[in-house]
Every structure is written in C-alpha cells, then in structure tokens.
Amino acid sequence: MSFVQICTCESILEKEMLLSKLRAAGVEAECPNRSISRKYTDTTVDLSFGGYSTVMGGFKIYVNEAHEEAARDILQKFIADQKASEKDFKSGRTDLSRFYLFSVFSVFIPILSHLLGAYFLFKAVKNREVVFNMQFFFKAFPFIFTLLITLAIFLTSF
Image (cartoon, rainbow, N blue to C red; front, top):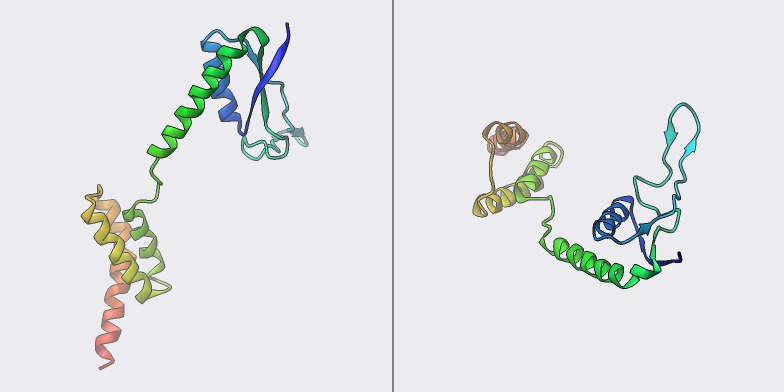
C-alpha cells in the first residue's frame, strides 16, 4: 500500500475533523503522530500551543493511493463547508457586550466611556439584543453610578 499526502492541517481540531470525515466515507487516512509534548515533571507540558502546530509545520494527512480521488473530493467539500461557516460566523462581540465593557471603563475614563457606552446601548436596543435583567443591572451599575457622580460634579461646579 502506498500513501499520498493530500493536505496539511493547521490545528489538531481541523486534523481530527478531516480524518473523521475521510474515515466515515470509507477512505483509509492517517496522520503521523507529531506530538512535541515533553515530560518535565509529573505532568505533560504541551508545546503545540493549544492545538496549533506552529512549531511543527502542521499535521500532514495521508490517504491510500487507491482512495486519493475520493479523498480530494471530500477535502474540497470540507474546505467549502469551512468557508461557508466562516461567512455565517458572527463575532462574539455584541453591542451589549461592548456596552458592558465601557461600563467598566467608565470608572477610569468617565466622559468618553459614557458616550461610547450610551452609543452601544442604543445600538443594542435598536437591534433588539436579548437583555437579562439581573445581569444587565450588575454590569450596568458602574456606568450608572459613575454617570450620576459625573453629573453631580458637573452640576455643582456652576
């Protein structure tokens, strides 16, 4: 049996997903173990940066030469699915989470943080983002508290 390399995966997760798709389709696929973990003490220290193989040059996927055509078709579909899911992926940063961030910063930089926080709160309400009452209260507390103090200082200065 002769094996040919069809691709190099960048992460352990990507490698495992592709291997499982190939094996589920009946394609004989392998990836040599290239772990660079070292035993220093009682625990193993993983040097592959949380599953990314920046030091190792990637995870090479090999398939049986007889299944190369089917493997390349599966690989193309896998890549297309990944690109489609990247388009659908929305950043984890919502306008409400940005408001919470500026709520915390309003303690240190009051005026600018209040303006930006109010802007993101307005956008969150406009986009009808889901608000959890108690979570919102506790995360908005610094914003409200520093806003009241800033207004009190401003009004008493006249």
